[in-house]
Amino acid sequence: MDTLRPGTAAHKDALCRFFVDSFVQLNPGATRFPELAPLELSRLRALPIWEEAVRTEASTARLVQAFGRRVRDPWLKEAIAMNGHEEGRHALLLEELTRHYGIAVPSIEVAEPEDAEWGFLKVGYGECFDSFFGFGLFALARDSGVFPRGLVTVFEPVMQEEARHIIFHANWVAYARSTAPALEAGAFAFRQALAVAVQTASRLKTALRVGSSQDNFTMNAHESFGDVTPRAFLELCLSENARRLSAYDPRLLRPTLMPRLARAALAVL
Image (cartoon, rainbow, N blue to C red):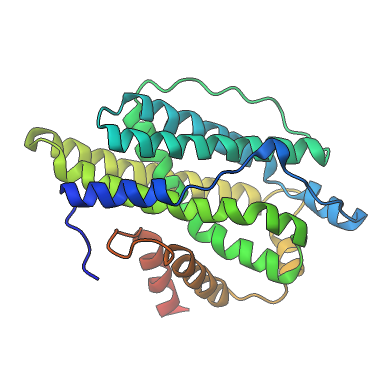
């Protein structure tokens, strides 16, 4: 099917309708976390991701919610408010998990953003980066048994919601850029490019920090997942990304940066 032309009323309607119609009711406070064997619990607690994950989700929720309050278009406002609600319950789910399994995470306070549109633009690209690799890592952890089956069940809806979020972001960016007044279009394009650069630098910094951590997470992960080559991992990320995004309106845009970079890397591996 042909994609919808960004900036049109049909494009906005399809974007908002896809997001609202695919909403699923979830209650993090009622989550039944599985009982873990001692080795499973030790592995879970040893993952050096919890503080960063809780901080990222709490910050994302606050930024999306703040932007939603400033949007005037009622159809977009409803969809973005729903996005913020989902981000908020992701943060609550992580808080419930760390509390249930006794994982120490410091209390995190997130300030109200001064520039809500910039915050929304930036976190959206962050989710595009994180989700692409997250889909592959989740599949590896699921299939290898590193992630207990009960927790796979708990987090599967969250992973699918991330697929919805990045489709929404890709189309919102295209819509906002196409409908911006001529004098503001250049500034928006610059902010868009800057957001990509900021999030790229942030992910590289995180990767270097985790890879050099004292618990040698990279080596432990390799041993747990088995002999997974970089090529196999990128191919898995591409296939999982395509699978998760395929559930939604094919006329809507998909994030393209990470798949393009992955395919370029595969060409030389």
